Length: 270
Image 1 (spheres, rainbow, N blue to C red):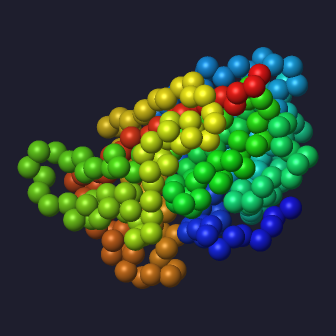
Image 2: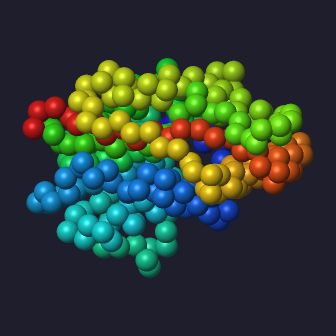
């Protein structure tokens, strides 16, 4: 079901091996801990024949965990690659696992079929010039009255958090810049005003939440970033120096903090 990737789609910059899957799962537990939920409590889950999709499912950890909490529902885990899906032997019977490139339209058989669609952490592959197209494809999966939940880091919120008198933080400063604009072509207005992106694409905004990482989870956030940097070492040996410099600043109490946002929107027409 995977189709050719358009030339304006950004390549996925990270790996899909066991360590990369560990990083994704680590992120999942961090994010659900700071938000307090898998699915926002405003989204109804008692509908008959409830059907939920996760677009960009990665390892499937979000949908796998939610399926255990909602055994009456059916689920679809969708990603451009199946490389990080869990082994078939442990896949629940109420989850379908399939591949699709969301930069292209979804097959008609799936359009208008879902009560809830979840998406998160698209920042690394989605710029402003194609954001509305991808949103349109994802929204097409929803039934009238269906809900879209989207969770992202807010790039413009990135800043260094360090004790007073800490001194220079060159490695953390570099990471702040990478959160805000990792490439000269990076553009994230679609995230910085995520509610506006929802409205522009025809959704009624139901919830806008901001989440911060408490001090006791700052090392967790830092460690998952260090794991991600490690996935670049095969192509750029200088990343090891950067990784070590970040580790040293973290060990002394300096971290890069940022805000995470969850927006829930509803498709009109119910």
